[in-house]
Image (cartoon, rainbow, N blue to C red; front, side):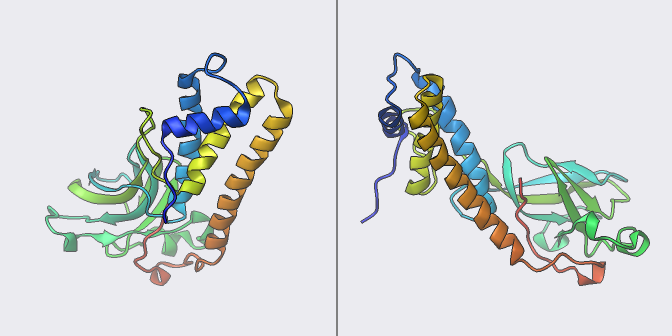
Length: 235
């Protein structure tokens, strides 16, 4: 039998019970802000672990001649794949080539490993909210790029809203809110216990992410070693 999910009202009740703080002392609006902060932090880690809890989106963008730097969508929390078409007017999926992730740190011979990249095997490097493609396009191409990504879940707003994450992590949202309330009202023993529980949750997710990365094949050292594989962007 599946466990019941927790909506905002349930999370609020759980957090107030754990912290021993009522609505007169810590408003529902402030607590909702705490919930959404915790939700956002959990969502990023879960998305980068490849968990399919969130909506997948795709959006096209235009390539600009001699420009290699582009912005990721504002609601992107994890990239699944970037595809590029360097010429013509791409009308079908077959016009695009999957960009392979690489790290400039792994490049040893710039002349052969970065400057002579064929358009049939493009590369992409992620930096914060941007990504850089190689080679740079030599002409403008309308809709020459496509990003498949995981979008950030909608913020919790109403009392009936439920986080789209597993029940075990829904409970941690309440823990985060309870820790914030306990800290404000100097309930130090409760705060220490609640903060430790939250920190352990985040540490466990980060360890899982690190283990996944350690088991992933090493990034290539030369273009001919690159394969058409997707990559989830780590934030």
